[in-house]
Amino acid sequence: MFKYAEWPETCYIQEVAYWLCFGRIPEVLINVEESIDEHRDVDRRKDSDARFNGAVWDFDSGYTELEFRSLGIEVDYERYLEAAGGDYTDHVGRWEQLLAERISDDDQDEVRYIQGQIADLKREAAEWQWRRSIEDQTSTVVDNARACVFQALSSGQLTAIGWRQYEEGSRNEIHDDKDDVPDEGEFVTIEKSKWSLRNFNWEESTLKHGRDIMKAVQVSTGDVLRLFPEPICKPVLVEMVKIFPGVALFANENTGEKAIRAEGRSPGRPLKGDGAIKSVVQNYFGEKIRKGDVPAKREALIQEVADFVKTAFHEDIKRTTIQRYLMYIDDATTSKKPKNIAQNSA
Image 1 (cartoon, rainbow, N blue to C red):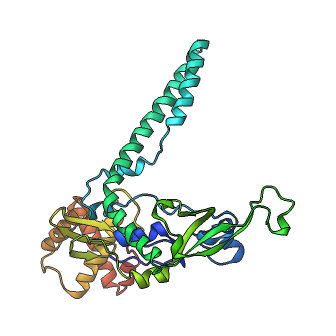
Image 2: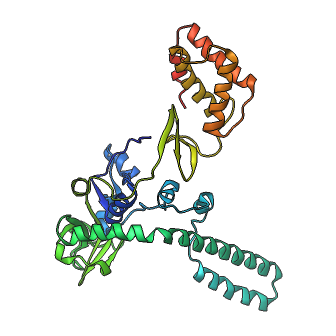
Image 3: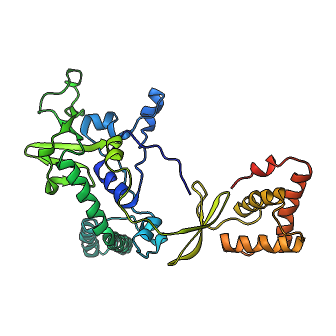
């Protein structure tokens, strides 16, 4: 399957590492407010907030299921998605201190409430630790990619820019009377000699060098693609078995045959009846019927449809349901309006 992607003008350094080890393409981080005001897309990597304080916007929401599979990591992915909590050690400590106070006050209702809050925080923290333990299994491949990126930066093959704050007091004159506006800065080119692996924070894209702190460090995506036109990751070895409108079937020796739904399909189990199965069957078999590439006997065609749905969606559908799907195709073919079928694409 292929997905249309628009590379942003620049990307954070960690995003380059993810491109190398997973083939993950950086996404444009749209600033909706500025895009509306200026009637154009504004990337948050260098929007007004970044220009004021070097803000780094969230670009990393964790690993995808396919990325885990590419590394051979087995994971309960639904649990992984739900475990996006955090380290609540400090929160638990404050609640436990409050609990001790309420116990001494003999306030039983408040005690039960606080005990519930502590239990919830500990449960979320445990899930967060589990999530981190899963992500730790990616460390080797991610660190190898980071090493490649750092080598390119420190040798001058890649040139980065970073937001550096002006010296204290050199705020723009129009902001002299506004205490809540931070001192301004500017994006400056980072010399290769300033790169230090120990002084670079990958998640925050921040580089320290002496007294200078360069925030929101990023590189031109054009330069990235010229230097790294392809990821260095080992691809997931799959054989495309079949492809249908909205659904692709892949197979490999580890997972067997598996249906992967196309981008944009809603999550969860595919709907029967008027849902995704109906649309895919009508598109795929409608085209086969128009080409005459179907069994001559109706019962054989019905069985072929049933087998397809079982393989692609892991669903069993009734014979009457299949006949209803095929009847719609027959009506469209008879009326010579095949476009009606295409409009129902999944």
